[in-house]
Image 1 (tube, rainbow, N blue to C red):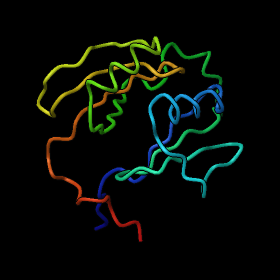
Image 2 (cartoon, rainbow, N blue to C red):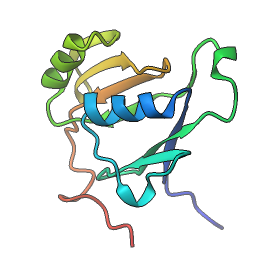
Image 3 (cartoon, one colour):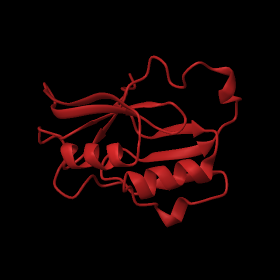
Length: 134
């Protein structure tokens, strides 16, 4: 029987791709993977699961909050420093940094209203230098 191995790709639909691209690359510091940077989508060069943004195919203004029921966690090497950067940029913080079961963690909102959880990865789940995508 076929077996699922876990998430392979994550993408968020956004209202304004250019604005979200700037937020994720300039404010959060993700690097754009130039091989997959198109007018309809942008993929970031991540070291675990590929992460992308795409222009919304539905009217996000018709939903109360995008992604309700889904929790997206992003690995970070310095939660407190990122939190300070986002506070200075006047980004909405839902829950300030705290020490939880998965390390130092906080929750904030992106320009489209997605709630993102950031944590300092405290387990050795992925090998140093990322995964092989071959």
